[in-house]
Length: 118
Image (cartoon, rainbow, N blue to C red; front, side, top):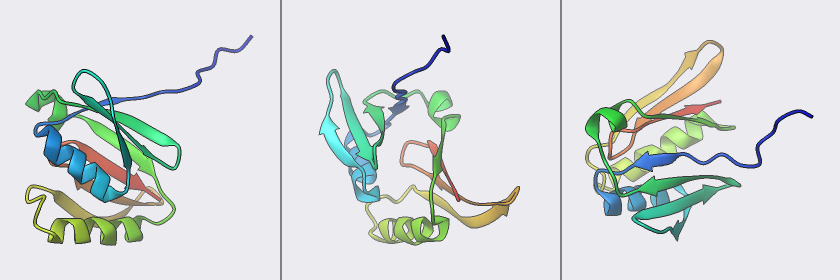
């Protein structure tokens, strides 16, 4: 019998838990309150757990790869979020070709790198 898994969920750090919850909600994720200082975020059946816990070295080295159909549309969406002024510390790099894929890099309010790959 081959081994399998039914689900995989990562726990992402949040330097400012409230700000991070607002950021991921603005991105389009649906939030549901978790337990013990956590919140779950879901979009199109994909989800992660945000936790009210932060270690800078960990957050600065935490990366999430997100497969998307349109990296340019995500770039425009994140630009609008950044222009709102609520998330002043976002870092956004325009999409670029990397090994045949269009890739968008966004650093969230806690320093987590989101890599959108088309």
